[in-house]
Image (cartoon, rainbow, N blue to C red; front, side, top):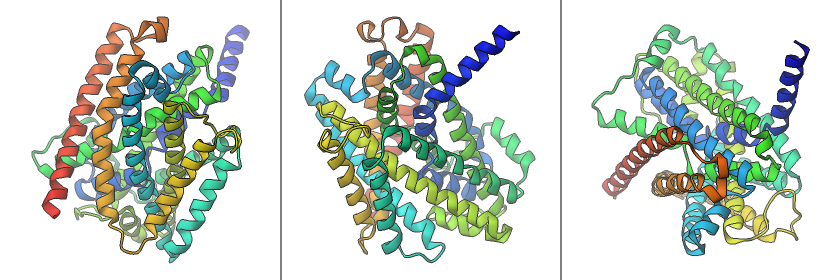
Length: 417
């Protein structure tokens, strides 16, 4: 018994030591865009979309686990491996698309900051610049350990959505039934919403950030079992948060299907259920937006610098990694600056970001599977046949749905012209 307790204690200590990259990457996926998508799903379709969360969680676990394993085994980031195995030209093209896609995503996050604080009558001309400065100082003046602690604290704040879900007092029986009974309605809006839920959960930047964070934290194959568990816990936590966002909005709009224009409208709909419900949902939106506004520029800076051979990492000083910090700074300044531009078409920019993510994600997933099956890179840790079957099936499904979302989005953009 004492030996068993000793092993459990050792595994717990190692798990706490590696806690960070996988958990943070998965949870931050519930950013302002994700919150809007889940809010819209609940407001428009009630509890029906809840069944998608189980297969989405499986797909997320598969993709994130592969990145974590590659980082632990090779000690290199994903963009670094792509450059070494596929050449600088291919890497440059992918990095250019990633920068463009992530810039549009950063814009969306600062728009989320503006929306959440405008609910409390704080002007975006105040909230966005203040948030940008705080985000910039966090990485530039900190180190990886301190930055990670802040990010882990931000993950905890997502519990506000769980509390708000209970305060709304939804129909739990219907919610549980819908969670395990798939229902596909032959309606273009419903299908588009399902595709969007997948698209907002598995994004290209996540794969690059997770693997880079695993490498910078120094996680090796010795800690892989605990690192893998951390990734799985993070993915499950992400879906739990999504579940309560959908439930909150389904409960708020019960019997009155509504198309909402942003997550702020969803927060407003919770006011009749009590001031605390409204405040908690709004606080969650603010936290998610600021959190993602930190992660996305960091992810981009990591990826580009690794892929093109520049020094990177928040543990380095500015003079040691100038390209890393300058890119990080420019993304924050650009994203925040565009949001406070009075007449900038934010909705079109968000649509463009979906198109770019849709174009990039299939390539990233295929590169990942090719890399993780290379014997000279992964040795005995490459994918076994059974795992490859599951992984490729996930790639086919995610790619098909993402390409469908891209096509639908392009069509919507053309129709609005």
